[in-house]
Length: 277
Image 1 (cartoon, helix red, strand yellow):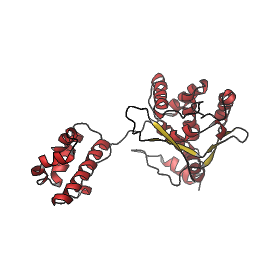
Image 2 (cartoon, helix red, strand yellow):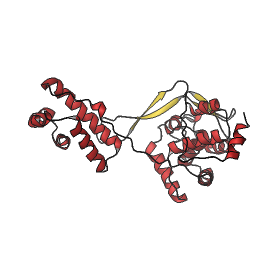
Image 3 (tube, helix red, strand yellow):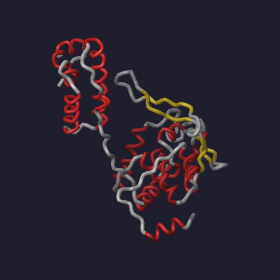
Image 4 (tube, helix red, strand yellow):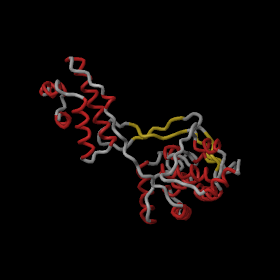
């Protein structure tokens, strides 16, 4: 099929002139079969979706120029890979928390921020020391970090910091244990520095995740910063915290909830919960 050939031919005009006889015979079933073959070879759904988008863009161009048969690419559905949630048990969660509380470094601080405040990694990396108000026990979130496309070949990942608006713009209450941790951590850090890097540049997302991976390997489990944020949400809900407070703490306007697979509570538990009304 023509996509592997396209990768070897940088000049798309030369390539498509070479295989016009194939394009004229192209239809929705051939595309479906090709993409399914890629999935069966082990390519992720996101990569196959990208390939589909490239095929669509190229074909539409030649469809207009050469009057090829119209193909409705929206009929080709790529099912997203189902990711198993790497949620920790309560015991594992406590192990990770206790481990990080004993170490005063950027990795452990980042993990504690995700566990105890539900912040996204882009939010915590954009925090400056001056955003921490220990007197009021608040963390002020007004910026966010994101990776941006780097056109300079061979250079490192580039990050952009931008201002945020409500609901991301918010204040988060610092829990007690994290408060005492921050008191020690901030003792010798300049207020103009970024919190997690202690420098005038933001922390690298990949470095933080690798640090979390290393600690997880030591403790015998694997998780991500996104999973830790989701666990924070679940812990808040399990503690019967007001749903609007939870949404405000997370910086979201709406919240998607899903029932765990094969979840079934006891009749007694249902009665107990209903009686709270």
